[in-house]
Image 1 (spheres, rainbow, N blue to C red):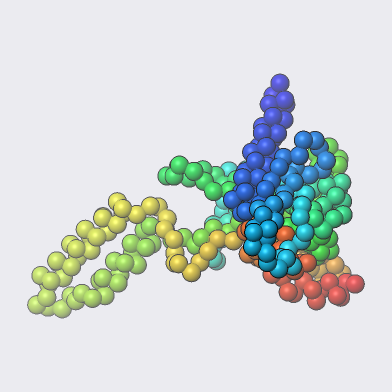
Image 2 (tube, one colour):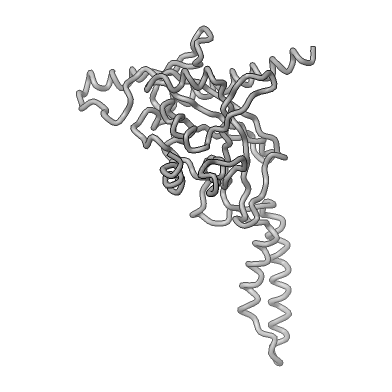
Length: 292
């Protein structure tokens, strides 16, 4: 019975992700429909709203988007708080998670320009808020061979011995600073305006008391971590196999994360013309030329 419950947990999580993506598609101005059978895809996406707009206000066809309808496969993973780690040299948190495709799923996705993969990463619930926002990104099916060739899809077998390709995804959180570190920074900037010279001890005492009161107030008001600055932002990236210069091929260790193009985390951009290789990893092209 326990095994059956695990099956339903996975099944319901899959349904949750599929309906979540369908709802997000409507929010992006498309229409999404759950396919009634197991055709290797989960959703069918159309853009009839745009057709209606063209009827009343004729415009040039959108030449920057693959023609509709789209066949979409949805993959999902649910993260736990323990999956999130701190990148010391960057001072920010990141979450590693894998998405796997069976060989027949990969074959279907790569067989048509209208096939798309949409991945959903459910983040751990923040107990200070009422909801958490899942991370969603998409890839064209015909981008997968480029990722595979460049070491981003790692071949293997699942627990049942079925061949699969695994994509290691990294979600980088907004840069954060610990509350106490921020308070220390503020206190030091205030202390720099004071003086401990003879004859000014009274003023120094007032300043010290003010700093102590400020520390206590900030400790009561601020959360445990605060955003480090306004310029830093969250993003999705992928890891690939490290390049082995001696053998001129990819090894077995995974590399540092390489950023995914921003358009792939925006569902309103689904189907737009993009680079065949969607990752910011220019160095790999040189190595790939060497291998070929």
